[in-house]
Image (cartoon, rainbow, N blue to C red):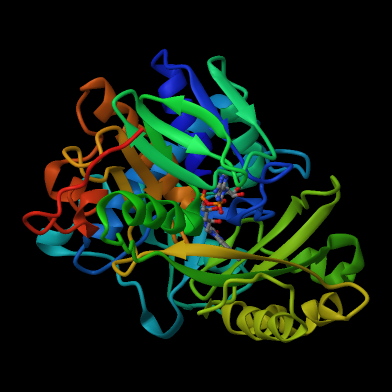
Length: 395
Ligand SMILES: Cc1cc2nc3c(=O)[nH]c(=O)nc-3n(C[C@H](O)[C@H](O)[C@H](O)COP(=O)(O)OP(=O)(O)OC[C@H]3O[C@@H](n4cnc5c(N)ncnc54)[C@H](O)[C@@H]3O)c2cc1C
């Protein structure tokens, strides 16, 4: 998502963009997620994450509207259905007083009794209604963005190493063969970005640049709608519900066009593999029972071993839970940009991050005000070099 989004933003501005993808097909990483949510984040003080996420969701929805097919049918790419957030244990209070953002009502309000009832939750359950929120099949948006004129996609092209010289950036494969040479390079390779950066500085400056990217494994459990009892089908919420993971139903899985339901996701630190695990299905069932207690019994048959399916991936996170975007260090490494660390919000943030890089390269206004922009800047993780250790760039 991060790579496709920045490629599209640049191509729209007339750039020729070459996208190098290690895998044989799109969606090899976390963006292979079958379906996810673009939804605002709410905090009582309307914190930085809440404000950045709203800007991100807005950018994603605009791009999805332009490039993909909306609707609530199985075969569509995304649906601007709105999302109900169940405020489990009273979490996620709306901001009030001075913290209340302008036009709050167009984003998030307390859910009405009708919306709570439609979700199947007991009367008076605390809940929010996010009207500018959607489910989206990430691979569809990735494909649509990469289909734009000006973008060339090269699959099965893993980059092993990068180096800088007077002509820009050289990209090398595992055999030491030059893949290409480019004036501007955007690393949007999620967790693997750290290895590319580390290699660069190790060989050229004698000091390792340890970019603090961490993997955070997650699993989604899902099943076919037609394997559920008809009484359960009648009671499924007509929109996604989040607040303790998220539940989405009536959306096609990536490999067929049949309606499925989805519940996710687990969070597992310090794991850089993404197998699907039976115990994670059990954890997701418990999650669903907490999120939507009245569905617990009716959904149980869907978790039977013969019906349940799973998808797992690695989120790529940074310590402050925000992405790293833009030039890393324009003096030491001119032309080297990052768009990584999307964490659990790549659908909501990747398009905004792509726009940040493209507007920067074009000298256009940053999409965010400075007080928010600084929280995303890739430069926030780079320390100034020690005197006498300034890097020597070699060809
Ligand atoms: C279970 C789960 C549920 C989630 N739910 C949501 C959700 O509801 N909403 C939301 O917003 N987000 C969600 N996310 C997060 C979202 O999926 C990620 O934030 C997003 O997909 C990250 O996109 P990316 O492009 O940064 O990384 P990736 O999709 O991982 O892409 C990185 C790409 O780089 C390629 N690559 C790596 N190294 C190299 C190399 N050396 N050379 C060439 N190519 C390379 C990889 O093959 C890969 O295709 C979820 C994630 C998980 C795991």
